[in-house]
Image (cartoon, rainbow, N blue to C red; front, side, top):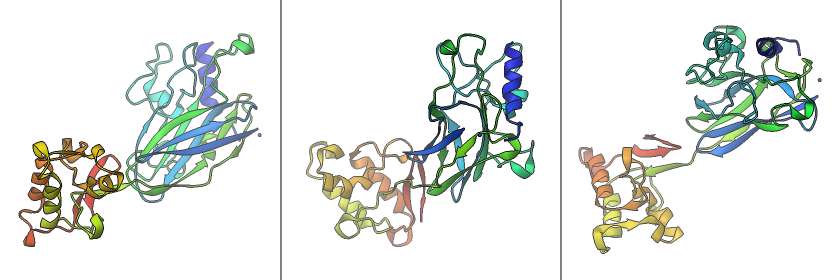
Length: 293
């Protein structure tokens, strides 16, 4: 029975594509966007096939997706047809296999499949499997509304979602096509802090790091015990003003305090530059340290 139900879930995604299903995008911050659905109290979807495209930044990760069959503990859309045939042995399924994700293989349908992670588009496929032989009130169905997955983009961009027709779009439990309400495209902005750059007017960054930035950091700590200031001890205004000087944590990320390590890092960054000035500062873009134009 389990094999039969799994096959049905896979086939559902190639059934031609009516109940209104909302597809939702939610910006969680730092480049993370949740992809959600809402069945609005109607017939549940059995499977989703969606294209997610990005205008500028690459989509680099996919996470927080359910895997496998629904059970008494957890429920969701954990059957991924594109990966299923490559990664899963039906007789003894390993749902946590490294390659088992909702990302569709671009080689399956090259003309109608996005390139995948590391590019500006992904195609995802997700279906559900649960026991339909028991009383409907006891079935381990997916929730009426939930998160399908979360994706990570590497910079500011606009995300759009469309259904993927060749893979079945969105199919209901009765294998009928669903009416789908797609979200408006979502502008994703990742806050960028130029680490070390504090010396523009009124402490506003000026796009370059030079000796003035070094002096500003030294002035902040020179009369403080231990030559160290914890940012949370400063006023909100001063936190904004001096915060970029905090660049000496692991991999140059902020560690919540400004001390001689930060001063040393700023000096090291400019010491070999003509005029001791560098216009391309170290930047924290989302969770990455990148060149800042």
